[in-house]
Length: 621
Image (tube, rainbow, N blue to C red):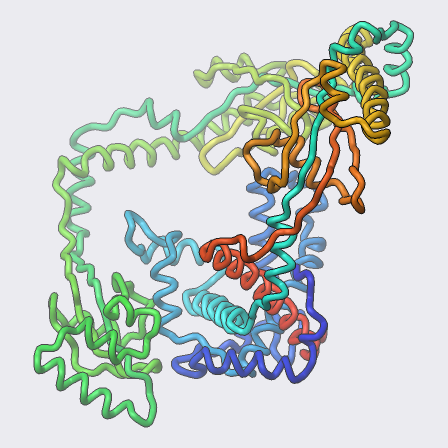
């Protein structure tokens, strides 16, 4: 994962300096989150801290889901649990080692910062606002409880602080900038003589014998992969729902039930001023209380006094309050406030808070007309799910050992559909689904000609398929690829002839003739450029790219001939190379380059530090 590690950063003195920089940058221990193992059997011990089987299992499951979602064959070795464990465990060990080192250096994550990070994650938002149900559902699907997810977020923040501290220790020297500018802003003089393909076109012929010989010698080049197409019938909750009629009385009854169950709720947008525990905390709390009583703006006081660095720049704003994210005493204080009110001091593990409700919105029950379309759709889907279960069972029974899909389609009111041809590892339409391709290429379907079992595409969609056509892997017939081979051999022969002409021109120039003189005598176009940069817009892009890849000579012209777009040949001559100079750059260009170099150096510093840190941590499996 890490590259270009600077070995000299492993020096103990440098290692100590980097840790010191991090200690200065990060306020460790203020409302910090405990990162000890949450329990369970450990699969590794890293500096005394355990990597639990729960952590490994969660990471393996998440990686497997990602692979399957990207279309990886579920039967392949890539998704076998043992292989995934072998890949992921070293990654978790590395992460844990960095966390252990960070904790030893005093790097922490403030509770308020963890909470604000969670509230700001777009994944958990519905309609632009944090949604508690979505939050709990998604983290639950990933194998987390709210408490363990907070720990994971805190770890990410700590590692981010660690990287930021290391990045701040990086620097760029004048020598580095000069060396890079010499290459990046290098200028080159060159010429390019274009030899048209028509010059030798009539001289080149390709015989049937040559085509046959190439075909026989390169059989795999003309291999056509195995393909199948299938007939299929499918059922889905969505399609069944479209056929279900819903009485007005049922919709009204459901609305009345919603009305009876509805509990009025409020949405609070909040801000806070956090005073962290410390020697001066009591005096700061008193100052804030005094200034609030005097009418000083809450936002101004937050910017001046708050120890929550994540919110102080925005007037202490924490966004929308979500139950379960903040400590209970914090939440209870919010519920006691009306819009615009500020709480008395509230104490939590993070310190002392002054909390302001900046906005309070009361959620009201939507009218019947507003809810009617959604209620109707929900009733249709609910009833369709019941019909779907029955139809699924019928589909299974009607297609088992059946000679075709027609009878099942007729009895279920379905249409037999056809897919285009598709390969084992790629397809369009229904064949995009790995499950469909696996079933189509199974022995029962492909070789025995049977219907497939019912394939569950999702919890609400299923299908059965059978082979329609099967094209085994084969070598395309010569008559189908003869024209393709002829064109290829023709082009190769033309380029060989043109390359000979280019060598002749090169010899004439090397003997003392000017490039322009030779080109004009032969009726060829010539392009000449004096000291142009690699991104010059006046020169042909292909020529320019090739010229800047050529090795510079020691005074003499360097030659190279290339195939140009369209099949022509170009003889290139590199005549001069001039290194770039910092003095020729604008101040803005120098600043941008320095920033880029600083970023790259920071990445190297981080990589080197991580290698050094990890090497100092004792790991047991």
